Image (cartoon, rainbow, N blue to C red; front, side, top):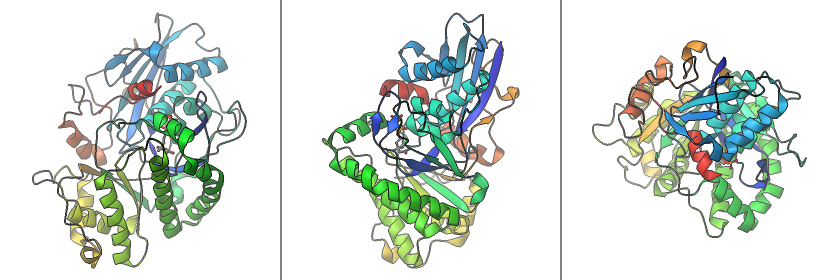
Length: 432
Ligand code: DP6
């Protein structure tokens, strides 16, 4: 019997991956680049166990067993790992995986999930990178964006041009400590699963959107160069502006898709207006936004402006009365925001009345490291590879209060205090 437990972060793209040239291998039509989100706030933990006593491969997602045979993405990841190593030949594997955030609500849950699965299996089977980024190709076949979650900091996914996908892999542009002042506010507008999965949405876009073809061929290559330069220079205004423009173009391709796809909603659009009004009031770009395939807003901000930005969010998108305590994952940050207040002139620049309760909660987080091996004491399975459901995955104290707030809702799927929301890989299986 051998067992490995890992944690993997999620990531948020600031130049978006949208569209595949090969859907079996998840080869993209353009390169992309993302920041790796601090695992203290959003992560997937996965334990894999190999044993000669297991008759079949099995997979549990937040305590519920999935039909692994039907999960083509997981099967592809298993096949790739087993094709590269004869270790544990003939032995079957048990996988136990848990997310600490809502699945498929636009928080890149499949990225964390497949990065964790691939990284755990790579460790179990003693795989090493044959070339830089090699192992990220395994995560990529699970879910494209997952290849960017193996590394920390600022991570590019170079599209490559080989048919076998060996050059379509992740590359760390800068480690997490390169720009420690860069922080993130995630405004959770919805924790519901999205109506159109990324996989389905981007396929229809490739088939029908001339704007997407133009974007991939002409716009993204130049933006990748500019974005990496902005990150290296820590030029926040350039970084945030490019991120906003790229998010807007990605959502424009969704509208250009036939029939159109709508991931943003009225709250998302209000947040976009709010960010521009905030920057107008400040007389400079202090806040950026980016939206993935869902309505949640990811705001980009420097540490010195984070309390002011959060104060503005609290003023214009306040929680329901009585929901204040759990609204922000870090209570100290909320206190700092209340002490600083929003910028003068914001109310004049932003025409909308405060919208109470439209944002469910706010994660204040930052940039963090990539996938990591955890101590065996943090395993999610017992020595027989069966799920342990009696304790939550260990979490740093700083974010514990916020995580516990999540437990009060119906998102909590497991009885015994497990913080997980829903299953990342289960959704991906449905996406196929
Ligand atoms: C909008 O990686 O979820 O988040 O490869 O089909 O699994 P599959 O898609 P997925 O798409 C993510 C799209 C995005 C942009 C991004 O993360 O780059």
